Length: 233
Image 1 (cartoon, rainbow, N blue to C red):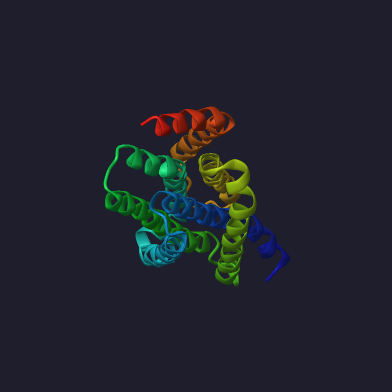
Image 2: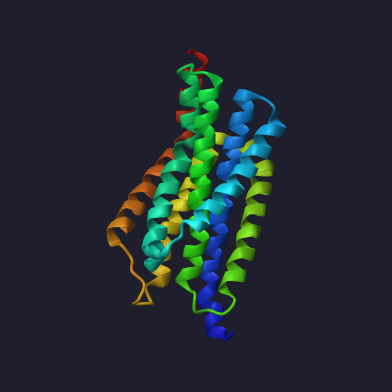
């Protein structure tokens, strides 16, 4: 591989790392939330991670020619979806529990969130590979960085995010990273004229990122209000 090929792939590997990091944190957030509401922590985490890996496989299978034809545009859609879904996933589970539905309904809803996030994550890998498919060994590099990003996300969640930020702020912060990747990726690929970028989606991502950052900086007030509402149900 030439020095030029190596250099142009480094930002892509950074995006891959951040996306894998985010997806793993989302799943751990949902696993922790489920264990808090339904108990049996070992079972909740085991099912969450297993279902997440299964859903990633489904997502990879769904990466057909139509989706891969415009990989950056498809990634833009994915990052918008993940940023929105990731930011509302934990509050949504709290809301479902707040309206006093049966435990089975809560469990099904949370596991559906796990599946959707896993499927979207599984779609990311083929798309990231397709962005620079002409680069030698790009698939192995992206897969390797993806596994490393997931590992770092696991450790960061256990040692910093959950004990320091809590689940609500962690969800918003992680969603902001998703939106940021969606915002930065088109600037990386602009040197390649054959790659299609949607400027409308770029604008939407900028708005989502701004809104998420505003919520994050005020998360303590929002979280406190939410907890008071939950306790006072």
